[in-house]
Every structure is written in C-alpha cells, then in structure tokens.
Length: 282
Ligand SMILES: [Zn+2]
Image 1 (cartoon, rainbow, N blue to C red):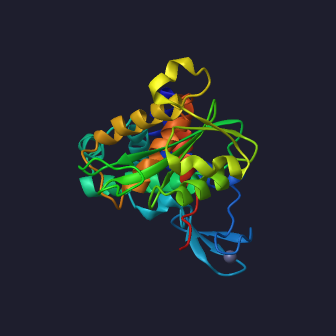
Image 2 (spheres, protein in one colour):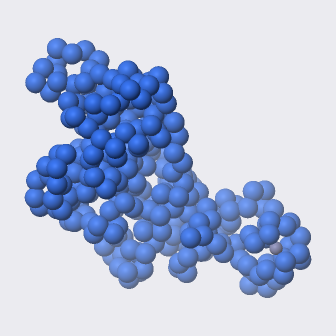
C-alpha cells in the first residue's frame, strides 16, 4: 500500500476502522459469522444480530484482528512496522502501547500468516535440504540433533519455498514430507546425505550435489535453499533467541517474507488481509 494512502487512513480512528471493515465484508455485505445468513440487523455500537440464529457479533468477531482490543489506528501502525521488520520492543516505544500488548499483536500477525499459508504442490526442479535452528550444540545429522530444531526446506526453483519442522532427520521423515509436497516426476536435488537415498524409488529423478566440486556440476546445486537458510537465520538472530514454543511462528514468518520478497508493495495488504481471516477452531 502506498505510504500517502496509509497516512490518510491513520489520520482518524474511523478511517482506520473503515479500512479493515472494507476488507472484512465483501461489498459491505455483512453476514452472520455463525450461520452465514445475510439476514442481519444492525444494532447500536457497531453490533449486529442475526435474524436466523440470533447470534450477536461485531465486525471483527472471530477473526485474528478481533482477538485484541486496541485502536484500529494502532493496528495499522503495528502492521506497517511489522512489515518493516521493526521489533515488538521498538514498536511499543514508537506507538506508546505496552510491550506485552504489542507482542500479542505481532504474534497474532504471525498466527494469521501460518493459517493463511496453504500447502501447494511443488513441481519442476525442486531442491531439498535440512538445516538446524537454535540451541548451542552443533547438530549431528542422522544421529542426535542435540537441542537444535531440525527443519526441512523444499524449494521450487523460480518458485516458492516451504519449510517444515521435523521431529528427526530419518529417511522416513524426509521422504514422507517430500511425497506430500513434491509432485511425482519432478527433478529433486539434494546433497549426499543418505536420508535421501530412497527418493529415486518414489517417482523422482534424483540428482545429488557433491559439495566438493560444486562449480563443475552445472544445474546440480542447492544454492536456492542455502540462500533461504541464510536469509532466515540472519533475521532470526535479531530476536536474540526465540523460544521453542514460538519458533514455528517465526519460521513461517520467514517463509512468508521470503516468498513475497519480490512484492514489498503488496506485503502490507497481505498482512492486513490475513488478520481478517477467521481464527480456526481447535
Ligand atoms: Zn446466524
């Protein structure tokens, strides 16, 4: 979104509310979020009542944005500063909300990113690799990974990256994730790790990178994923240690940012739109 439009929107609380409201209801047609009926009547204080199931709700009931009661202008600022990778601490200083409130807001943004990320089949030329995050000990591939978190990356060349947490790096874990994500018939590139040995029996053309002679091998490389790992690790380092519990949220944020890195203009709108999705029921 253009900066001048953003400045217009944040000038009043009502404009900010309308900005989100317009995205929440297509053509402003309010429907009951419980039974999807359009037989809805307005009540005072921006409330609605469903004529069919009698459910009472507001514009943002049930979506991520509605999970935190702060001014809509603050939401606009938080989304903008999150887009610019400003830390929750710095955001709290800049907009005069408490740090716990801002942290809750940015974690809602992250949760909405996870919910919006839809798995898609990857095809063509695909790179596979695993990496280890967090912890202090060096991870040992194929054996114990110490206190590090193993993550598998799957990258479609000239396309998107998908990252997944692994419980271990056994061949079984790596293969089951691959067959769920990469279409059969694709060309898959990996390094020489034995965990990938069975890929050729799963319907893929499997080519292995020999790190010793990378430059003599033409198309056989996994540089795309190595680029993503350094992109993600450089950003995660700024948080000075992410708890294990929150790590999946941060990891999906990195995936989201990386996959939209060529569209910085559209990032704000995507983030705002994600916040208006319904929070999934557990
Ligand atoms: Zn209803």
